[in-house]
Amino acid sequence: MTDTLSKKQKASADFYGQYFWKDYEIEENAHLDFVIRGIGQENLENAQTLLDMGAGSGKFSILLKRRFPHLEITSVDLSPDNIATITRNAQMAQVNIAPQQASVTDLPFESNQFDLVLCVYMLQHTDAPAQGFAESARVLKSKGTSFYAIGCDNGLSNIHHGSRFFFNRVPAAWRKPSVYPLLPVYWALTHVLKSNKASYEELSKDLVDWLYNPLQNFVPKSDIQNWFAQHNLDFEHLGYTGLFKSMMLCRGKKQ
Image (cartoon, rainbow, N blue to C red; front, top):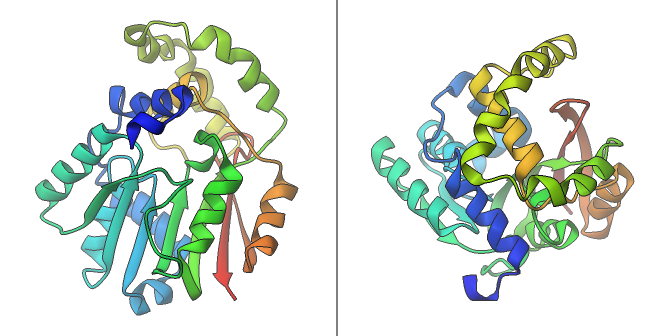
């Protein structure tokens, strides 16, 4: 499957394996509460199957499985390194989830297969965010629920695109250290704007992702709302997260 990836897709998949998605964060009060609020407690209690799209280290999958052991959770990621990480983290956490390498823009599942779909912080890092959204809706069962955190265009997307030529040429070993001087300023901004970032480590991950991820395709807010209508999902806007409202939180119920 990796042989069919574009150079940008391959670079984006490798990006996470090279940097910081080695361990899942055990801060249950923050990360678990985030996804429970997004999906809905009742939905999680009554569902049987959940798909975690772009699962990274598997942290959301693992925390959800611990809290809701009845769920059958499939964790999809494009990076083979991340699949190995998810497998290792799940074993360490002593939970049973099903990691599978796949592109979120071409999911290897039947239509109407999952009760719940979790699709957070990753569509903007694909070649085709609209196609990834369409796939999330396709595999969701009728009356099923999906929860999204989608990178939306907050006026800074031109900066992202314009900076790619420079940032993609910074040597890999210098990338994480290069954000350290920016952390005090970023920390101050996040607390002034109340974007709920907890630590310098978490902020450094944000900055590395923002500056160096090879794929940055942020989506206009109007497009996101149109996607829900196009794929027969009821749209519920849950707010924003990230600096300058860079991530739109929304929930869909399939008609």
